[in-house]
Image (cartoon, rainbow, N blue to C red; front, top):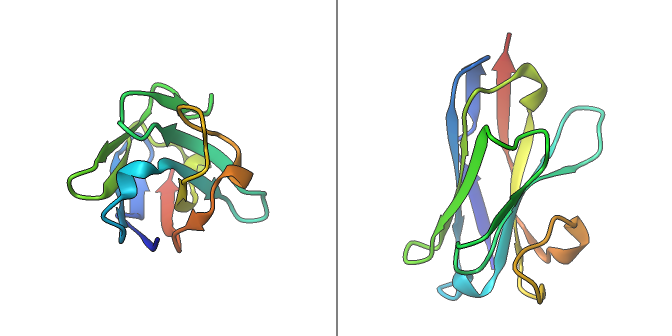
Length: 125
């Protein structure tokens, strides 16, 4: 599975961006999907995850209430709507696919087997 993330860019604090992650596989609905981010000088951290059907989602506390993950399985695409952006949201955002997860979703990076190249989000104050 190849993943292509897009939609990053420069936003002002309080603004919004929507990231997209297009999957190459027609069976992408078989995968739990997630978004992770890595800020300069910091470790990669979990952002959001969504179940195969899209019915269940889970967020990091730092983005809960501001970010929304969704998916369109017909288009093999996962989205991350980011609202009320803060400078601390600045990072490279990567989408990932987890075919082996037995539960609804996963916030653990080790569960994910396929990773996209990342898209840079910069939030200015």
